[in-house]
Length: 264
Ligand code: NAP
Image 1 (cartoon, rainbow, N blue to C red):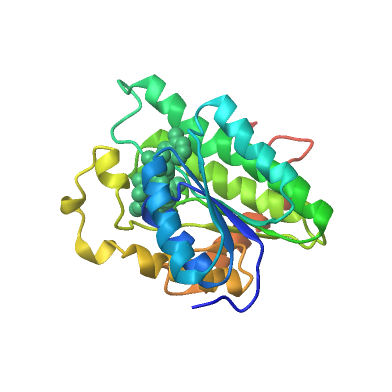
Image 2: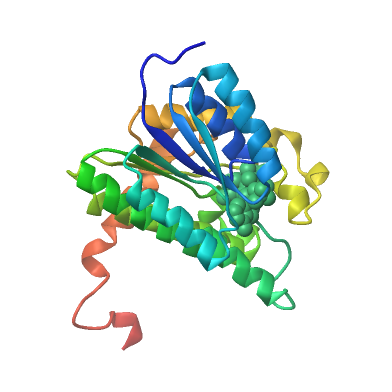
């Protein structure tokens, strides 16, 4: 199959498995050339061969551990210098299990490094390049745990709340610059992330688990519809809009010259 026309290059972090690997396939099918980033180079090379053969697109592999500054700067540099890149999928991420008390804090720090620091630096580099070119798209993979932090590991949930917040602000900053911004908030999706973070996915009720292909297709549908926030599972989009409206309604009262009566 040959693509209809070139869409530029999609830089995908965490492209070696799960959500990132499926996005790679779907974006290649849409005619994007690919720049695949992750640590497992052999896996990326295998995917590159399959996708370039099947979709007749250029696929390059860039091995990087995004928790390491030098590797991260190398990817950032590509975003700054390679004008063919028209889409950044900030997807690489890890989860964790258990309470913060007693947690391996070095592991928590590495998670923040990947889920927050790397994502921010890459989004910043892409925002700079794409806004100068007046085109491009930044997709950040958050999670529904951004909305229900009481239900999951504290640090992981906080990293995903950060991704949601960053994306909402970024969209405002890039308004009128020709750059599309989206945060995707998947629910539980069947990928390797569960075993990697020491969670037993077999204990999760099957009606709560989405297959990764369906999740990515829904997210791309949200992207095509120009959504800022995509919640693939949520049946009624009005529920999300109501939450946004309630939050914004707090606005006029969040910063005032005197304390509320109940504190006096
Ligand atoms: P996954 O299958 O474990 O994929 C994670 C990807 O991130 C892999 O390609 C992995 O590749 C890469 N990665 C991990 N550590 C890295 C590092 N230090 N440097 C560079 N790449 C690294 O999990 P997934 O479910 O597809 O997760 C993708 C994103 O979706 C994550 O941000 C996750 O938080 C989010 N998400 C997942 C779910 C879910 O239920 N699955 C739900 C909500 C949100 P290498 O090991 O080759 O480096």
